[in-house]
Image 1 (cartoon, rainbow, N blue to C red):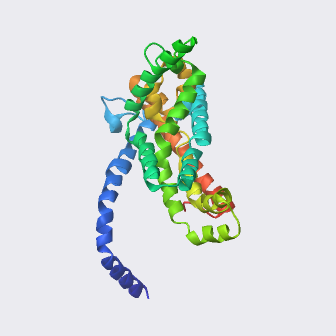
Image 2 (image 1 turned 90 degrees about the vertical axis):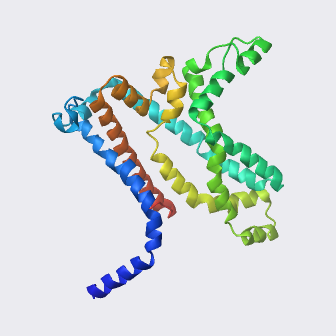
Image 3 (image 1 turned 45 degrees about the horizontal axis):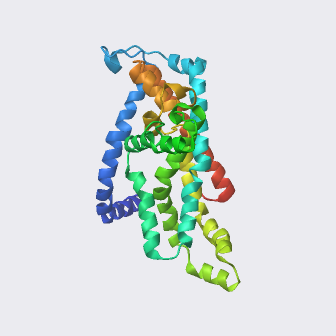
Length: 306
């Protein structure tokens, strides 16, 4: 029986060999660039000395993980990261969903395509470019903000140096950059909804709003659940590229997140082992969050990643 099963499996693999060949480049990419670099996490358990190398440096045990929990600054950094991520989760995550629902209600294909194309463009700009635009627009001396403030006689201030306005700019720029491109997957899901459902609802007297609430939105629930689970996996990211290009020492108290802290401590201050320990701690917490959220979502909605 086992021989028959092995033969059947080999025949099946042989029939699908071209599909496996298509899979090969992606597999090689992940092994080289994602799994091989994981060897570097050994630094978190070593007293790293560049002259001795990773293998030659002595072991440090859990010293740097104990240092994480005893450090006052890491508590502030984790708090900042969670606050920024939750703000983005509350305001930035629903934005593509609402945009996709509104796009679905728009009439006129030409106008709809124009709006979609314009909304996608910011996604393809790097945070370096977008940060430059934000600096130009919000400059109190030569930017649009300064021009409008002077026109109305308002007192100007450097908005990116104020903690409260910095967080507002951070979340707003994230929404502006990603809401259009993020709506693509929701629009694709909406396109797959059966037209018979809408026709039946229309015959029952349902208007556009009721059809959106009772047909479109529930049909999007599986994809919303999956993307929400994946988003929670990045809850300790905070957005390194965005913050690194926008923040300054005046807003470190609210803007310094785990990734920027790791960068400053690990590379700028040459504390490689401590920076690696913080990064590894972040990865473990993110993995626990994804597994926990996936379990809760599967139990409550029957939709999950695995």
